[in-house]
Structure formats: C-alpha cells, structure tokens
Image (cartoon, rainbow, N blue to C red; front, top):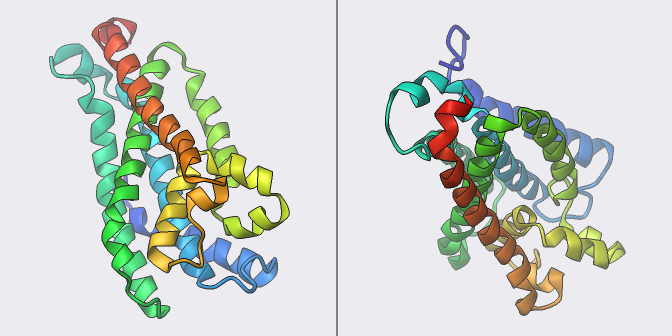
Length: 246
C-alpha cells in the first residue's frame, strides 16, 4: 500500500538505504576522507546505516500506528500491543533484505568468514527489542500528546550523529575517550559496535573496551532492558483507554 502506483514498488524499501549508503560513502570517504586508513570502512558504514534505518523505521512508523488504525482500534477487540509490534515485524522483513545485501557486500569486499558470525543474531535481537520498546512507548504517548512526532523526528536526527555510524568509534576514542564512553552508553551505538566487531574481527574494539571495563556493559544493557519494560508497561496501562482517547 505504501508504494502503490510507483514504478519500482516494494523495491523502494530496499533502494532507500542503499542510495543513502552510496551518498554517505562518497561524501565521507572520497570528499571528507573520514574512511582514510580505516579497514573495511564501507562495510562498517553499511552496518551502521542498516541498523539505524531499521531503528528509525520501526520507531518512526510506530509513533502514529495507533492513530493510523483508529477505525480498527475503535471497532475490533484485540490485544492493542499487536499494532506497534506489527509495524516492527514489517520493518524486520525489510531488515532481512538489507542483511542479504550486506552479506553480498561483505563477500564482495573480501572479508574473511569468522566463527564470530554465529553470534550475529544476538545483537540483532537486542536491536529489535530496543526498537520495539521505544515503539510501544512512543505509540502510547502519541495518542494523548501529538507533539511526540515532531519531537521524535528531531531526536532521531540528533541520535544519528551522536551514534558512531559515519565514523569508527576508534577515531573518537583516540581523540575524546570520555566522549566515546558516553556515546557507547547508548544501546543503539553499543549494538552497532558489537555487530561490527563480530563481523569484521578484533580491529574493531568491543563495547567493553571502549567503556573501560566489562562491568560497564551493564549501562547500555540496563538502558535497553529499562526502555523495553517501560514501553511495554506504559502501553499496557494506556491501551484500555486508547479507543476513547482516539
């Protein structure tokens, strides 16, 4: 329905992140030189873009999901949590396509297979949990407060640049180690860094190394769990009155 009437149809869901990747890769690698001397910079950039695109797609679509389905929520009795989770499932199907493109790109650039690839589903599950928790929270708040949408759009833009997507975290850690630790406390940044480490090997430091100790991993993990539980709790508390609020 989203791409009804367009010439390429569903392919747009795949082309959008790839076009963004091409533009950012050219600007930051060829023009600015951010990828100079960084091994497998293209793969690192594509991993970051795919993760952020999935995160922004889930949360951005979930914000208005309850309002967009107002007629269904008013007339049909069903668990309301299905609404934001259905948005996540659609985005997850798109994520599967993105990962297929990533796999082709990884093989084309000559990255050697590693046993650590078997652990890649773990950070991907963490990414889905983070996006689902925030999606439930935002969709519940938007029913009462319509300012949530523009606020979240601005926060997403800020989060894009505050997350090591366009640049490797090693460059930030060398110049501003304290800032790198603060950035890595962000669960999204931690997930992206772990994906890069598992995919490309020890040339990418682990989240624990950047934070300065394994015990500090509890910070991004705790924030992720807290956001998921908060989102589910707020949604379940507000769901019974959602139809009246709409």
